[in-house]
Amino acid sequence: MDWGRRNRLAKIIKLETGRTVMLAVDHGYFLGPISKLENARKTIGPLLPFADALMLTRGILRSSVDPECSVPVVLRVSGGSSIIGKDLSMEGITTSMKEALRLNAAAVALSIFVGAEYEYQTLMNLANLVNEASEYGMPVLAVTAVGKELGKRDARFLSLSCRIAAELGASFVKTYYCDGFEKVVESCPIPLVVAGGPKLETELDAFKLAYDAVKKGAVGVDMGRNIWQSPHPIAMIKAVRAVVHKKASPEEALGVFNRSK
Ligand code: 5RP
Image (cartoon, rainbow, N blue to C red):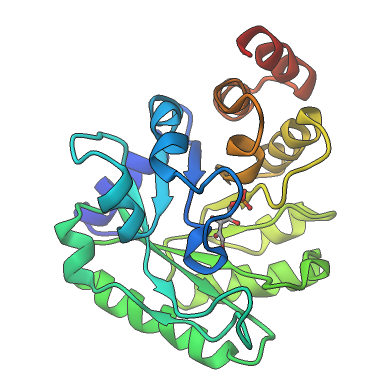
């Protein structure tokens, strides 16, 4: 791997632990003003000191994050569909590599929709983005999107999606935790981070998800709703950090959460 790409990735996946707590706030690119992200600046600002990387679109980066911010940016560069539109998988590349460089991105991210109507288009988006990103030492994060079909979050489907992402040249992949997650990790030769998904019933459930994912080989989380839709987002991210970077158990993380809220 060339120096620039390794250097950018090392900003995201921390050398001290080999792990990362990415804060995902890109949801508006197809969900619009989702609950607790209506005012993105208000939500993101207090969480920045606790995030190893920030995943978002250029619009929210420019409008809602100060340029003095030292948190590495994983720039969402795919889009073009909406939650009320015909098909979420109908995505294109929305943001140029020149723009990603201008914004000092540490990586670019796009979704791939394996098994969906526009599978080919999104996989070619990934292949083309990797070709372009390679020219500039820019890592590519492939997000194994499931669209509205949350039931697709099983090991067979996610292994297929993650492996295809790796084969097409992604530097790292974001996927979902599932039963048999170790099989997804085993067959994926690039680092994996897990999404939190829709808000879980309890804080402990979110800590368990993060704990199980890193125990089974994920390098960390790229978590959104389970952090910032909590009434205590700072306590949540601190507790997730304890799991990911300090190997805290879910119960220990709950202690961190209760002491911080
Ligand atoms: C949307 C995304 C989100 O960043 C991802 O789902 C992570 O956020 P959450 O933990 O809320 O699921 O990629 O396509």
